[in-house]
Amino acid sequence: MNVNKSHLGPAASALTDVANCTEFELKFSSDISGLQRVATLKELEKYPFSRRQRIHTVYYDTPNGHLLQQGISLRLRQVGRKRAVQTFKSQTHHRNSTFERIEIEVFAGPNGFDLAGFDDNVREIIIKATHGLSLEERYITDFYRRTTLVTHDHCQIEIAIDDGHFIANGQTHRLQEIEFELKSGDQASVIEFAQGIALAAGLQLDFTSKAVRCALLAGMIVPERRAARPLQSDMSLDTCINILLSDCLQHFIDHIRPFRDERSPHSVHQMRVGLRRLRAALKMLGKAFPETSFREFSDRARILATGLGQARDCDAFQQLAFADCLTHSRHPKDAAHLQTGLGILRARAYESASTLIDSRETLSFILDMQAYCARRGWRGETIDTHFPILSGPADIFARVFLEDLFKRVRKRGKDLLDRSDEERHEFRIALKNLRYIAGFFVTLFNAPKAAKSWLTDLAELQDLLGLHNDLANATLMLERIAPLSKEPFPQAAGFVLGWYACQSEAADKRLDKAWKRLKAHKSFWI
Image 1 (tube, helix red, strand yellow):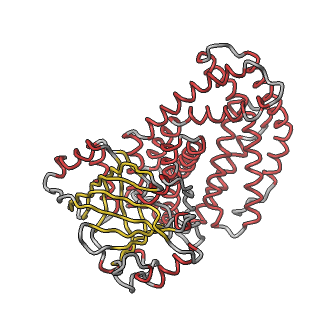
Image 2 (spheres, rainbow, N blue to C red):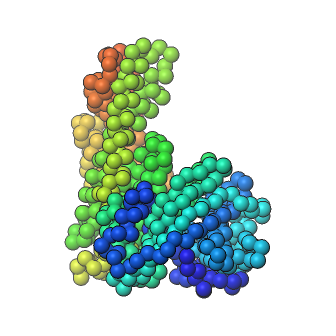
Image 3 (cartoon, rainbow, N blue to C red):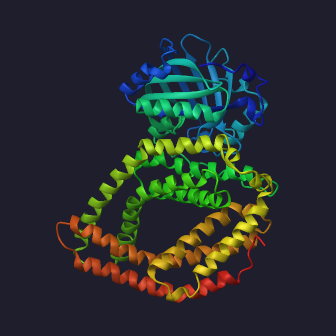
């Protein structure tokens, strides 16, 4: 580990000086054979790895994890016999990349960890986050590290291979990781280099810091990432594009670790929401700048979202059938057969989703998208006539695009009650895209009350259409489940369909009124 000398001592750089205290790092996990493969790759034959060094790290927090809840970690690290170093890590101010963090390192005091070693700025943040409560040793990592420094495309990249253990709350878990840290140069180059090594060695992209992994081992609840900074009216469209795409991609990334660890319905749903938000942004930008790679990335995001679709369908049906209609005291006795068949279908769907998330395609999509944002690749692809739009105010672009999109939505919603199920579904998708895009740009316009009212009415209309869509989906799900059940479940199937037919009919009675109310609203972007 190299200590950045600009951060040593009480005069450590202020957190606002992001250029001087930002760490950009990609991490991958593997087994022991993967760690060994990395060191023998042809791409690294000119860069021999160092001898192993033992690294012992102690992480500090309050008993209730106040620093963890604020996305902060504090550690004391001993590398071999070198002088111990203490490190403060936190999210960057824009909070839209899991690979980028603020890092401030100072030498530890003669008696070990000493908060006084940090400057006033850092100490103030820690005291505020902990409410002045005492810090104590919470977790430990103990591992051996080998490193090499690679020169690639005018960049210097440190590769570290770690093998050891996480230790927390009396439990131990194996630690096997490969890290790529950018020492100098641009982020896109290190992403592309790391991607090549990862694909060659069969590594799994990992998004969880050592501190968070220890916290999870200790049974702590890790908070979800706070949203990126809102768009502002004085921002250029180019700046807004970078924030939007990075934030939507991060939304997807944030829920990969919970899916791997817990296989929870929430993580599947949120991964799909992240991909839908990303696709909405990419489709919008692809329409405005057709010469760019936005459409290609949108297609790749669609493939991922589709691959997660069956798992999400199973979870949604489980909720609709067994948390809603079949909770009735008079539910059919053959509902257990339906539950058994659904369980088999869901297990298969989750296995497919897991394979997809850990696939080379997903790894490449995430890193290609991250590199595209890091270098703002659309700039090099945009034709000259589009440069004024890209460099111009984002609110002008947003106003024109939202107005055009709402006009197309109004056209699709004409004679809504007479539309077919397929047409209603397409209308609902159009509303969903409108809702995402309006949500992206809402902070560009100084009309919070009007925007909130408009978005609330849009959400209600979307939900009413969703009830009608649930009936169609329930029919398809019952057809998929039937061959997997050992016994038929005609009564349960009829109960489910009848229940949702009633819900859909009730929704239809409110649908026309909700649509008229939305159309009558004054658009908040006007």
